Figure 1 (cartoon, rainbow, N blue to C red):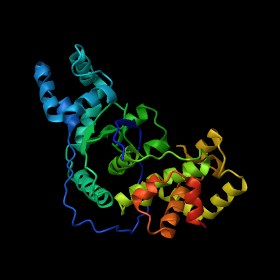
Figure 2 (figure 1 turned 180 degrees about the horizontal axis):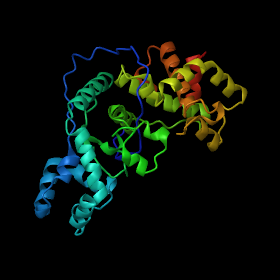
Figure 3 (figure 1 turned 90 degrees about the vertical axis):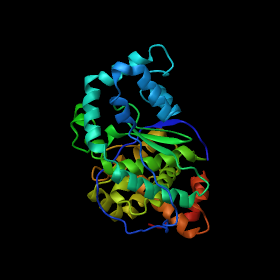
Figure 4 (figure 1 turned 90 degrees about the horizontal axis):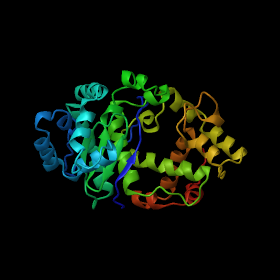
Length: 333
């Protein structure tokens, strides 16, 4: 699995229908994942003794502090002459202080997050027994970078998980369909999504609609294996009504794509309209959710794994040929 530092933006969503899948027995896997409250350590430093406080942070967080400073909030290396001034400006920016207060109120108690992370990483260890479990950090970035990871850690920006009605999102003019996904319940699924994207390649052999649908479907399938009881709406970023719409019209969606000969379409705008973030899927009408085609991609992955029971999760993630997956899935909605 590749080990690289990367940054990606992901968001959250609302609750809805439940899944009854229990997944494999992971009770024999003994590990505990306790997220570290980096954002509190950072904002509650004694600024009258900033030099020593930065040394203390470096001793506790090591190279993560460098990555946070350079890659996430982009103020340069802690070893640079102007670092203290830049950091002080970041900490004392009035809006940043307000965001920190809201994040501390929501996330100073990590008991529930720790329990959910531990269960998810137990499943990760079940499927990938040789993998190292990363340290999880909670940070704030004033809405710049949501998720970052390196070989030994993954870090998530908690200000993006304060609830759909958070006033910050309204100030930032976040569209409603995105604000509805920025909830605490999405934090752990997004961390597991980062584990998928950071450790496996989701490049596709072909640059067409069906390949992108299946690639994103694999990501959702991975999350489902890590969190077997995740709600369907949480998994797909759908409301309950939107999820039911996809279930009811699955065959019609597929028939429409086949009829329009869009499955193997390589036009980037067409691909984006099927699998990109949007309030609804352009080709399916205003009642459809955005990325409704990804729901079909997930269903194709489910069919593939059912018809190829000897395929491991790692084998699946390493298959780059979406056309092959579609052929061997024998998908019939």
